[in-house]
Length: 92
Image (cartoon, rainbow, N blue to C red; front, top):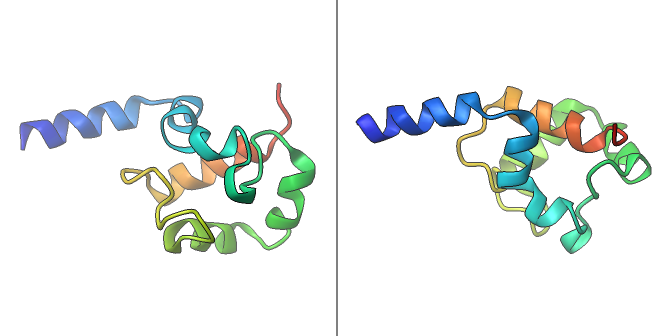
């Protein structure tokens, strides 16, 4: 039980960028299996047009080559939303 508490504390303290690097980068950095690339606003636009609830459903249920939950087994809905916003926004 101590390990689970410790793991959760680490997961909560991660920034969105750190979560992206740990869980999303493997596919979204290079566009593996047609995953929209991070910060590619044009690639993300048609997906965002479907709405956040639809995108959240795609992550939670899996879509094409993306497994259910993506690669972030400890992400909450709010984490997923923050990751979508991070990946779909232009690079700062």
